[in-house]
Amino acid sequence: MYILIGILLPWLLFFMLGRTMEGIICLILQLTVLGWLPAAIWALVTLHRSRPSSARPKADKPGK
Image 1 (cartoon, rainbow, N blue to C red):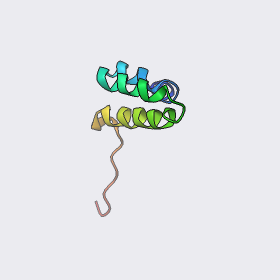
Image 2: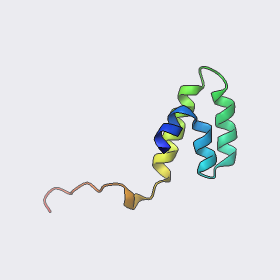
Image 3: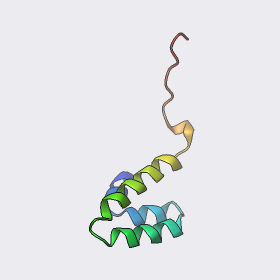
Image 4: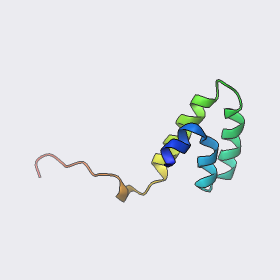
């Protein structure tokens, strides 16, 4: 759900994550046709970073 919002309406994702200033900047960026793709990528990267590290799968270390 969040990924779809991040792709279609990146500014809304920032507001949902409580990052108001970034949401406003993203909305201004998205208003230009060329700015929509960077805004969507920025929102998805922020979503990935905002998730707790325990939710991410841990890679197995070789030799253990």
